[in-house]
Amino acid sequence: MATLTAESAPIASRQRLLWLGVIIALIVGLPFLAKPFHIDDTVVLAIARNVTHDPLRPFAGSINWFGDPRPIFEETTNPPLVSYYLAPVVARFGFAEVPLHVAMLLFLLILALATAALSRRFAHASAWPVLFVMLSPAVVVSNNVMRDVPLAALSAAAAALFVIGVDRRSWPLAVAGSLVAGMALLTKYSGAALLPVLALYAILQRRGRYAFSLAAALALLGLWSLDTQLVHGRVHLAYLMAERRGDLEWSDRFYSGLVVIGACLFLLPALVVHVVRRRRFWLLGGAAAAAGLVFVGARMHYQGPVGWQYGLWLTTGAALTFVVIVPALASAPRGVSRGRPDAADTLFLALWAGGILLFTVFFVMFQAVRHIIPAIVPLAILGTRLLVQDEGSRWRHALLGVLLAAQAVVAFAVGAADYEYAATYRDFARQARDRLIGPGREVWFAGNWGWQRYALSAGFTLIAEHGRLPRPGDLVIIPDRVHKGPLPQGLNLIEIEHKTYQGRVPIHTMDGSVGVSFYATSGDSVPYAFTRERALETLRVFRVASIATLRSAYSAEAASAAKAGSEAPSLRSTSQRPRS
Image 1 (cartoon, rainbow, N blue to C red):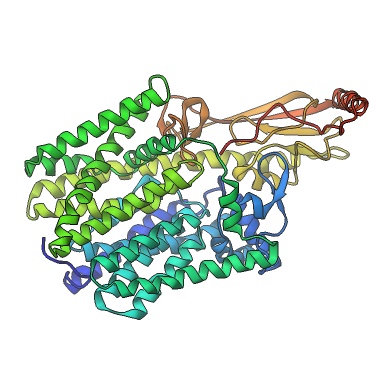
Image 2 (image 1 turned 45 degrees about the vertical axis):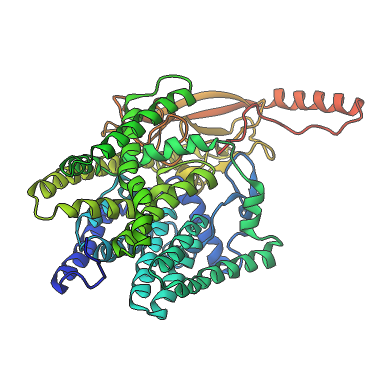
C-alpha cells in the first residue's frame, strides 16, 4: 500500500468528504433535538447549573443518585468540561431540550469532520469510515447531553491534528492536537487512553520529539486537578482511583465490550469476503476460533446458556476484532522494523482501537456502549483500510452499501426506541404535576436518570433512604425500571394507580426483564434487543397510609441498642447500593 498523507486525495475529493461529514452529522443529530433528558444527562445538567452560579465550584453541592444525597465531587466520575460548555445555554434557556441538543450538534460535526480527516490520511479519503462511524448505533442512540460523543469527537480531532502535525513537522499543529486531547481528558478521564498512542505515533514516524508536545494535555489535567485540590481539598482523579468503585470481574467487561462492537459496527461480512478473496484462510480460521472460544468462555463464565442476540453480537464482535486488530499487531512490527510506513500506520490504528478496549476492560467500573464509542473510529478506519486494497472491485462498494444500510436502519430504529423510553418519564411527570399535587399533600418520588430531572422540575420531592420522611396522605411515585437507590423501611404504601407506557418500536434499550442495557452493558445483557415485549415502563403511584410501623420498629431497635451500650442504629433498607 502506498504511503498516505492528508494531501493524498485530490482537493475536490477532500472537499466532498468534508461536506459529507457536515451533512451526515446533521442527519444524525436533527431528528433527536427534542429527545428527553436521559440517564446521566441529569448529572451533567446539575453540574452545568452549578457553573452558572459559581464557575469556580462546578462540583459544589450534593446529588441523590444512589438513595441518599452525597457530594457531587464524590458522586460524579468525570470532569466538567461538557457542563461548562452547556452552562451558557442553561443560563439562557434553562433546562430546555432543543437548545441543549442544538449545542451538542457541535460535537457530532467535530466527530464527522475529524473522521473525514483521518480517512484522508489513512484510508484514501474513503467516505466509508465517516458513514460507518456516524451511522453506528453507538453514535445515533447517544444523542444525549452526556459526555460520550464529545469524548469521541475530541479524541478523533486530537488524533487528526496531532498526526497531521507530526507528518508536516509542525509544532503548532502537534501542540493543538495535544490541547484538544487535554480537552478530551477534561471531558472524561478515559481520554487518557489516547495519549500513549499519540506518543507512539510520533515514535513510529521517527519523529519522537513531537511526543513532548503532549505535555500540553497533561498540563490541562494538572490545572483541573489543582483546582479540585484548592476547592475540595482533594484531587478528584486521585479520589476516584483510590475509591475503586465496582466489583465486576475484568472478564465481564471483556465479553460485554465484544458484544458492543458486534452490535455497533456491521463491517464483518465485508471483511470476511476480503479475507476469502485474498486467500488468507488462516485468518478466517483464526477469527472463527476466536468467536468460538469467547462464546464458550462466556457460557462458562455465566454458568449457563446465553441468549441468541447476545451470542450473535459476541461472536460477531470477537471475529471483527480478530480480523482487524490481531494481524496488525502480529505483522506490523516486522514491517516497522523494515521501514515500511504503511506498517507503522496500521500498527498505530490497531493500538489506538485496542488500547481503548483494554482501558474499558481494566479501568472502568462497568462496560457500556458509551465507553466503546471512541474505539469505533479507529476500528472503522482500519477495517476500511483493509478493504480499499481491493480497489476497483465492484463487490466492495455494493456489499458495503448493503451493510451500511442495515446498520443505519438498526441505528435509527434503536434510537427511536430509546427516544420512546426516555419520553415516558417526561410525559408522566408533566401530566401528573397538576393532577397529583394538592393542598396539604406532598408528592415524593424514587429513582434517578432522566426521570429525576423531570420529577424535580414538576415539583416532586426525591425520597431518601435516610432523612425526612413522607407523611401519611402524601403520595410516592416509583417507576418499575428506572434505577433506584435503597428506600426507607417501614413505609406503609398503598398503590392507588399506575400507568404503563407501550412502545411502538419492537426494540428495548433499557429493560432488565429482557436482559438489555445500552447504557450499562454487564453480565449477559445486550445493548439493545429485538423483543415482542412492548411495555417500556410502568410508573406506580402510592399513598402513604402510615409510618407508625417504621417509628415503632426504630424506637425498639434504638432501645435495644442503648441497653447493649452501642450506638443507636440508623434507618436501613434491605436493598443494596448498586455495585456499578
